Image 1 (cartoon, rainbow, N blue to C red):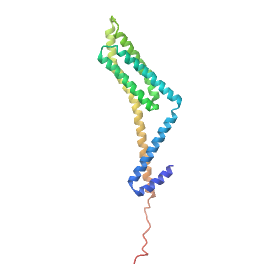
Image 2: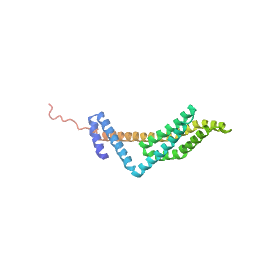
Image 3: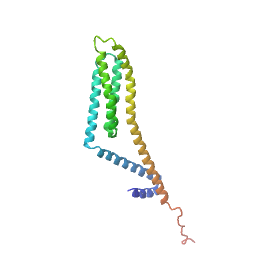
Image 4: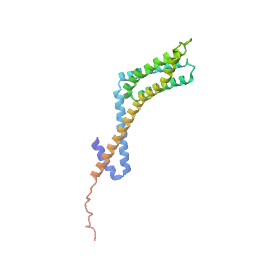
Length: 204
């Protein structure tokens, strides 16, 4: 296949640079399509079920957090909790589009989302208890301050997923550069640097 493409590239180089660019772009598109097809094939039914189950588990946790926050009177705290839910749910959507992020999302749910879910529910329970326990104010204040740190931790986990996308893009660029370089080399090698002299036998 590479040899055929190399010959095609050599011929097109004689036609013009635009044709070379077009063939390179075509090859890149073909490679990208093959990769997407391979990714789809590699995601078997068991893996797809695991992805769906993971997303379902995560959404159940964010739903419980969101519903619990509706009992609060503090608007700012409700916004903080809603923000955490949105970050988590955006990660679930990224997982649905890219199954390679499954491990990151599962770890996120286990080590970040589940503990946060417990913190939010306990916070809401304590904040809405009447009469409020004597030491509740200091505990609630400490919890409220921790929400910003939790948000930072959530964003760091999402950044890992984005970093994977950047690496994928970088790989595609390197493939493009390699193919383009090979096309240029094949074109140069196909050129006759010492063309035969023009016959003058018919000239007077």
